[in-house]
Image 1 (spheres, rainbow, N blue to C red):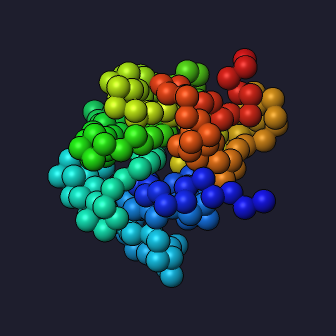
Image 2: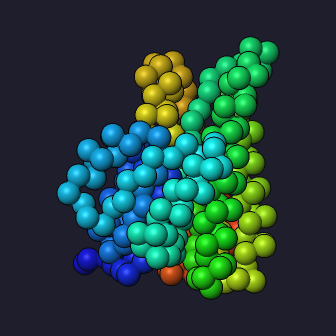
Length: 249
């Protein structure tokens, strides 16, 4: 059965050049949405979405507020409004606590947390100004509740995303806007190659996942699209863990 939950809706997706973001954009188009796809990798997006008239590719570094504001305005100029935001851009850094450099710490938090704030603020302002009872889905992580070695900056940033999501949900509820997050476990994406391509680390992770496998980016995208749709109309402020049971331990 064809699912068209996003018919006549406009979505904006950050981190849209690969992985979960790429799956989000393609699934949104399949479900009837027009999509503004944002990423620093413009050339890669243009290749991935070649021939897709309902996708607007925009170069954007989410750590730079001016670029975020300009990209959101470009999406508004093209489509007139934004109904749903999927704030997905993120990076990981692997350094132990004592070896973590200031540069690494700031970079991870700038992309994952400050970037989420910039994008949320700009898109939510557009929704409030237009009276749109929209939805936001931020990408947090299982790392917001369970930590592993050498991922301190990442865990801190994703913990921040989860808490920011609750804060935004509280403030946006009076406007009829829902704000939620997904918390993927270890998905088969570029960001998790450091785990999946390290035999010892990979085996350890799989032992702690009751379902015995890594998640697929399409599965994380499906969880996000559920939260962004009217099917989740009475859900706000939650982080939906999509982790194969990893958080059960």
